[in-house]
Image (cartoon, rainbow, N blue to C red):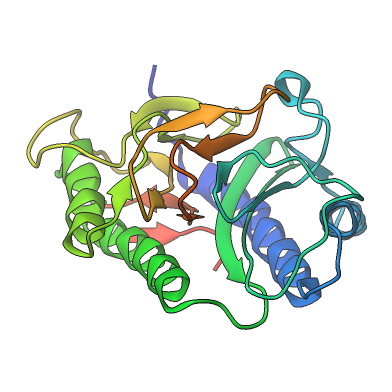
Length: 248
């Protein structure tokens, strides 16, 4: 069931997502060669509590940490560890959510560590551009397929692939709500967007094939061919003539 949000609820979602983006900014500033992903996780937790919120992912369906830290060929749900230290040339996806004042916020970005390759730079730029371009068509009257096809078109125009095993989602009083938002599809298909919908739109894209597999930890999704992967996400409120990136 799709739950439409009123103006007061969207205001609260904006406040919640503002905390998410602030925490991700703090984490991004800490990213450099030699830093462990456990340090990033600890920082995210501290900064969240400082703002009167709580980490949304920790304990969610048994996930053991607050932050998801996915490095290089890890697509999503990389688990922070004191043994995993960043090195120059890495790219790292940082995916984070908080619960605040009855609502959830969720966002992700991919960050470079020092000097990265041309293809890694292009991959990150394409993932971000796919997200922002898709947000432009996420307006009332359009359909989910318009978002999905826009992402796919941007990504495949650069000869990258979109991950099909994971999708974006609605968000609000629950971390994952209806509807699902795939990163591939056809224009003019799927449910029609309405003012009051709030969607977490999140392209996950690979240099190589779209196929992924789940590591033995039961969480981390990795590219099947070992190629690099990038992930971007914003929580977005749908309106009649535009969409609003919550938290910005």
